[in-house]
Image 1: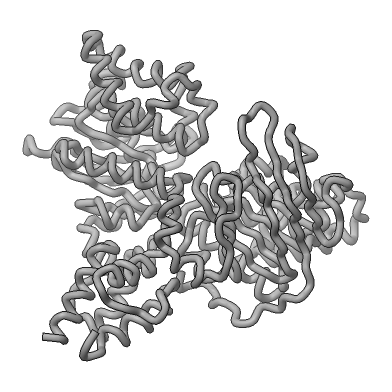
Image 2 (image 1 turned 135 degrees about the vertical axis):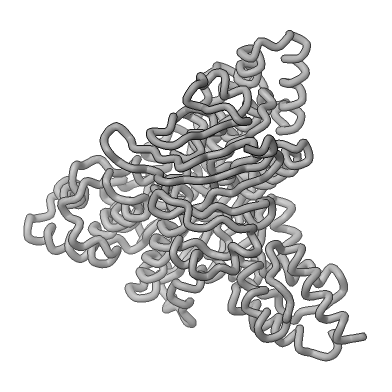
Length: 299
Length: 280
């Protein structure tokens, strides 16, 4: 995605913001757990992508980060989730919303008001933020996502990308430390996708916001994520930086996850006997790798 | 008109009752057996256009003919046996209480004999690998699987035109492979396919022709190789080349000196050719 800001080089990651210990969760009336013995530590400022096939537990894992699992679902939880040091089982979802903002796949499910302004205000009113402070936060959050000036518009009259950015703004107005996005672009057109990815990248790079995104668009993940978590059948089956994860094409393939196209090209050539020092995972990386390789006299 | 045009739109426009012009001045001919991808951002008119092909919408101006017959003079029921429409949202399509009943519904309505209905259902079940969920309620299935069931239920009707609206959206890699296998099967069977999609790698792999829409009009009609090199149209419609195409395009000027590639496999072959030439 060439039009988006380029990837940061050194993320400022020191303090742990999320810690998951031996988390197993099974929904009521199901025969096997959705999440199995998950252990995960996420540091402040990290951009984490969660990938895996449908039914791998990606959404359940995302929902466990702000307490929706287990507070608003029916099932049995073992293990612990701490966000900013707080045990989610001991804290209500409304109190966790200050720490973890959540954006879902279908923006229409989370928008309920008649104007953008009231959509933004409702969450803040619910937690008793005074009017002046509220207006300040709304203006800030709309500015960040690029929706300033649309305050009086009906959310239903916005494009899909704008609706999803509004959902992000509503989450941001709570001043969360972590933003969790669950397949935020799956219902959007290419323009909308790019808008949402650009906002998430900017929040991460300029505001050092911790981002956890569940996403199928591996080409985008390869450009932004500091770390990729691969889930299959409720378990973390792999975790590492984008190069490590996407280079393991065969193990991804075995669970039904495809690599970026440029990685598949390099891997396909390796299977024909050519060798690359590293498999490229981004378009820029691939351009460098292949232009050197194609220029050389002997492969 | 030539009999080989299975769909023909002449100066087609559609204005919705509230006054919104969703498509205007559309001229389009689709040949039997062609796979035509219709691209464009949401709101550009894609879905409105394709809903004219099975009579869900009738032109407010101009004409649409299916096999030479004006759709304005035909019922949706009659047209639906020619053109099967797989909705973007399967919840708008599925209504039966089991996957089996869903698959049987179309062929039954077509008045087919029982053994033919059974054969159609069995073929669809096998092809889409629905054996293990055949008695499930469709609304208990995951959204991506529901979309597969919606495709299977249209497949069981064996129309000559398949209109697929965003078939790979929300599918994971496995589901998306199933859709690709389905498209290849339709191609082999000589079916006409109208593919509405945002999935550029899919377009590059399967389309014979690309129709790009912007602001209610067709602004480009080309084969995928021409289309993905037409940077003006890509820029105007805010669409992007598949990553494999973008890579070959970037390298073309410097090292490849060959045309752009459309798919991963094609790129691998093109690169190999260049390297082999250098060695020999």
